[in-house]
Image (cartoon, rainbow, N blue to C red):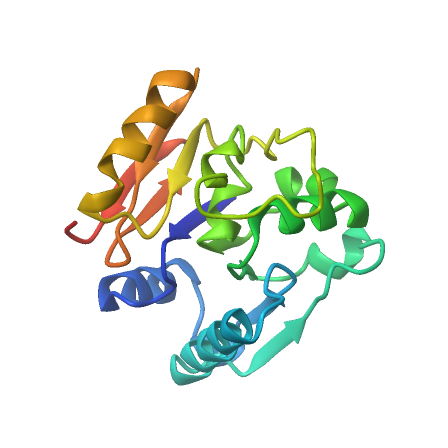
Length: 198
């Protein structure tokens, strides 16, 4: 699996260019599974609409929305070119990923995984990094992530967050990588590259 972990989707054109390059086919031929589950508030749902529009603007026509409100079977995702996981509340998203069984299926996915904010955090070793910004209103006690990558992303990083992030880093036994909205991180075969300037 290739991963493109973003802070704010394709805010940076370099991220969308990278996305199109990784498809290995034309955008018109690609099929995307779009997971908006983390978004529950009106504001978050506006971002979901914006994310879907970004995909349409890039020429992606085959978009299947998958809400994680039931068990997901392997054949639903195995032939997808892209799994695109939107942002929102990270604790709620991880809970729904577990309940749907997607956490068991994702590590074997052969396509491209695109994460936005919460969607980028859940594939790391732990989602506790989201606690300063997301309310754990689902009372999730086990914050272990899906562990596809060995570092945790802190999205939407701004200089004013530096003290909070330093505190997180001092307590974590894994690497924490902060990303501004202008940045994304690309992982192919374990090799990591940050796209965009801070």
